[in-house]
Amino acid sequence: LYNNKQNFTFEFDTKDVGWIPLKYSIKMALFIKNLKKREIQYLEKSIIHVYSNTVYNLLNFIFIMSKPVALVEIYRNNELVKTFLP
Image (cartoon, rainbow, N blue to C red):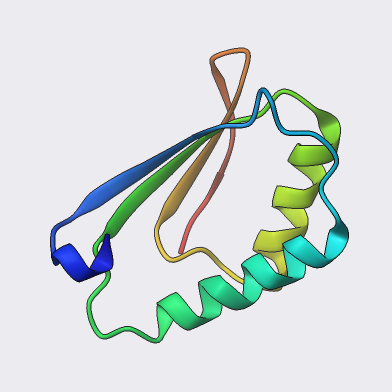
């Protein structure tokens, strides 16, 4: 999406997400750090729908290791429960 050079929003639905290894969270934090090195940020916002405590805790862990590139909104039961700012 960055190659398109157009602003975009990500929306994630984690309803069918099963077990996630902790190492995936570390890889995601490193990916975010690499994205932040880009001169232009096209990602405007991420919306994440969370259904399990495991996914919620992993997201918190990721954003403690690396601040997000853009605003992140986390929803549970269609209700905003947390935001992370870049």
